[in-house]
Every structure is written in C-alpha cells, then in structure tokens.
Amino acid sequence: MLDSILLRTFVAVADHGSVTRASEVRHLTQSAVSAQIKRLEEQAGCRVFERTTRSLALTRKGGILLSYARSILQLQEQAVLKMGASRKPATTIRLGCSEGFAGGWLYAALAEFRQARPDIHVEVTGDISTTLARQVELGSLDLVVGAFCDAQMQGETLWIEPMVWAYAAKSLLDPDLPLPFAFLSEPCPYREAALASLQRHGSNWQIVLTAHSARAVTEAACAGLAITVLTPSNMPLGLRPIPAGSLLPELPPAHFAIRFIESKATEPLRELIQLIREACFRWRGAAAAR
Image 1 (cartoon, one colour):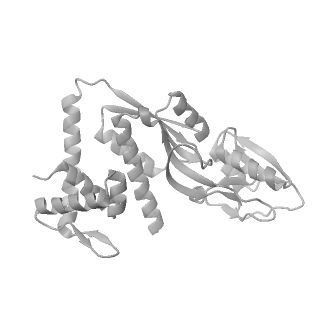
Image 2 (cartoon, rainbow, N blue to C red):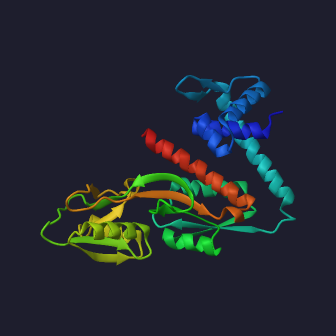
Image 3 (cartoon, rainbow, N blue to C red):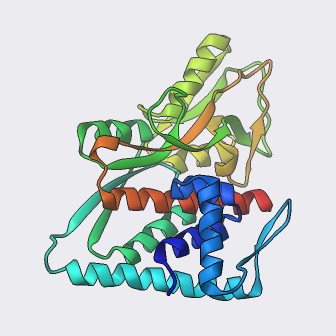
C-alpha cells in the first residue's frame, strides 16, 4: 500500500521540479524529502524520478504514478470530509485580494481548494491592499494576498518586482509641461510610494486623475493622458516603461505577499495558504520558462 504522506511529497516534487522547493512547501528538510521519495520508490517497486546534476524529471512509471497519486489524495480528502460533514458546521474563510492582483493561477488555487474542501466556503473581497491589510488586523478578514510597497510589512513574500513608471507607448511627454499622473484613490501603496518619490525628487508634476478602478487608471495611461505606476507583470499592451532618470525618480520594489495572523490561523486556512503558495510557484516557474 502506498503511504499518503509519501504521495503528497512525491506530488510536491513533481509539481515544483525540485527537491529544494518541495522541501519548502512541505516544511521538511531536503534530506527528509529525498528519504520519502526513496521510500515511495521502494513501495512502488520502481524509480519515479530520473536525477542528474542539473535536472529532475519523472520516469515513465513516475508519470503514471503521479496521475494515480493525485486521485488517491483527492479521494482520501473527500472521504474524510463526507464522513465528518454531518457533524461539522460550515466554515467560511474570508480572503481579501488587492486590486489588479488576482489572476488565473490564484483562481485555480481557489477552485482546487473548493473541490478538496467542499465543507469550507471561501468568500473573496477585492479592494486596495492597504485597506485589506487593516481588515485582517481588525479580524474582518482572515487573510489578504496582494501588493505592498513597505519592505518592513508583516507577511510572507511570494515574489518581488520592481515598480516602474508607465506611459502610452505611442505618446511623447512634453518636458516643458508639468508631468501628468493618474493613481488609484487613497490608501494605495503604489500611489503612496510614487508620491513620496516625486516629492523627494522635486519634479514639476500634477495629478490629473484619481480613480477607484485600476482599469480607469491604465486606460488613462494608455490614452496618453497620464503616467501611472505598475509592475512589469501587470503592464498591459499599449503601455511602455519610462526609465527613471532626470524626469522621474527611482521607485521602491513591490512585495507580492500573503498576510494573515499566525495565532488565528485555522487548519483549513493553512491548507488554503499552502495551495496559494504552490499555485504561485507553478505560475512564476512557467512565466520564467517562457
């Protein structure tokens, strides 16, 4: 019989293509992960990975086992939930997602969680990350995923990107006129970081648009009405980055992170956070490979 703990580790290594990353998401040492894979190979009677000094790939039988492993783990989770469904009341996890952050990878993680834990209701609220972080502190949200510009902020960083000034690709700025800017309304971490940099720089500038919608801000920038602040992963077609220099100052990086209160984290919440981590690692890995 195949041990479900070993199967979970096997799936993590297969998904991340790395013992190092799998050890991080499984909260194990690398040697423990390697030992669990060896035990699984002994139970299965075959090698599941081809190892070289630079790569880790599934063997043919490993690929077959991976499909069964996912099914076995899913069935185990569903069986446990069905057996306990009549005894446990429905639980709600309140997730905050910052403006412009959510993508297919995050929605896929939420869909996977709903399938694995049908007894848990996830309620998603979209808003500016600063506002959502305060709601976590007040207890009206359980966790928030989004962009933050404060390097000292409390949370778990998923990845870091530079912030860049963005303007219409086919428009030119007139250096003799005040630089026009469009921002989300307060409190917005991008807005706060941009204004702080501009005030230190002493440039001739003015705000021409403040909006509650990220779409309105990017449309204004695409039309050539204003400059705004984005990260490269959120740069739409029609915009180009403006290098920091004589006209525009340097900007701090953006930290894309998960924030929650550790002491209040329930087991279902930790399971959801783990799925979000894994989905993010897969998405970032696929983006880097392109």
